[in-house]
Every structure is written in structure tokens, then in C-alpha cells.
Image (tube, rainbow, N blue to C red; front, side, top):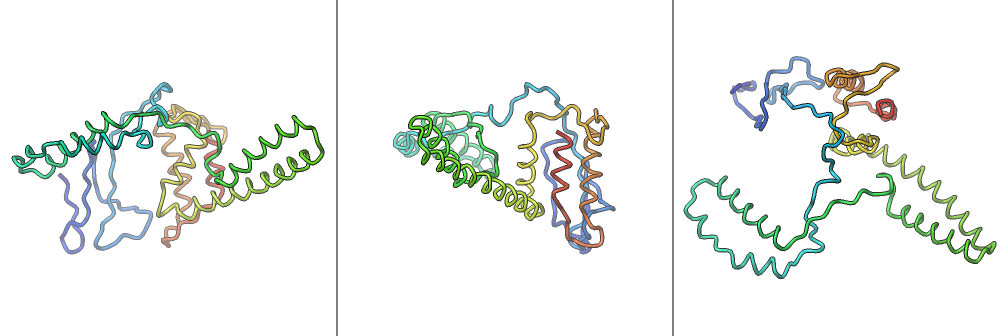
Length: 250
């Protein structure tokens, strides 16, 4: 166990991994260091997998509560005898056994399904999708009746869809960039939409250079994103060049 106290010789930050790791003081932090929260550099040992047949998020079964038998689930929960928890002193063990029993009931009354992969880009809004569906119906209507009014209506909505699509994409990129610090998950969702294979890549290309090893790929990301930080300020400058870099890696 490694101890890195703050200026008051106290510990306000903990690293509790389930993988083998090494924690040390980061002397070259990207942001100014707080006196009460010393910068920690954590290194994990993570196995590298390049098998393209590895399961993706779309292969993982998830509970479909829309199709659940809630009447049976509620009645089964009422009939559960929880007295066995009274003999356990560990709160962690009680919590674990509670969830074991809960998921047993879920397995009985809640079916599992594979999440459907959306056919529309992630930046499409609900209104834009409705217009696209309406456009398809108008096209079928035009093919059936072959009237000029149907054709004009189809052209108008198609023109509007192109405009709305450009606006929706710009708004999505702006939203990802503005929330990069507070919500980095949206950024990585954007990265994943650029990738056809959700498994760990075995190689990447950048500036006509082939990157083969995981360390080379990681260093390329590190080198690029380090240029997005201003050492003398806590403000991070991110632009559309970030996405251009990601597209170059695909």
C-alpha cells in the first residue's frame, strides 16, 4: 500500500482498483496541483486483446424491463424471507447477498434482450428522425400516385432534412467539446461512433505512419491531446481538429 498525504498530512483521495496497479506522485500534472489533493499518477496492468471476434456492447444481454412481469416480480419479492441477513455482521456481505437474491428474481421475471444498434447517427435528433421517416412515406406516396404535389412536398422535406442534419451535427460537436472536462463520456461515445470495431485496435495509422504496438497508439493519443492543454491555465482548448485527428486514426 502506498501513502501520499496532502499538505496537512491527511488522506482525502483513495485509489481502490480491482487490477494490479502502481500509484505515485505525478510531478508533471496537466493542471495546477491542489495543496489538499496531490496529483496521483496511476498505472494499471490491463491485458491487451486484439481479437476482432471479442464481444461488443451490442452482444451483451440486458434486462428488458418493458417486457417484465411486474406482478410476478412484486409478489416474489414479498415472499422472500430476508431473515438470513440478520445473522450477517458485514454490511458489504449483506449488500452482496441482497443483490444476488434481487438478480435471481430479475432472471425469473425480466427477459433479456440484445440492445439494438441504431440505424441513425448519434447526433440525429428525434425531430430529424421523424422528418426522415416522413420523407420515406412521401417518397412511397409519390411513387404510387406520381403527382407533382407529392414530388414538391418530398423535395421540400428532403431539403429541410439536409439543413437540419448539418445544424444537428454542429450542435452535437459543440456539446461534446463544451462538456469534455465535466462529462468525458460523451467524447468517448463520439470516438466509438467513428469506429466500426468496438474491440481494442491492433494497429492504427496517423500521418502516413503505421502504429502497431499498444504503447505507440497510446503515445500518439497522449501527444495529440497534450497539445490541447494550456499548462499555465486550467482552461482546456479543444476544437474540431480533435475529431479530424480521430478520423485520421480510423
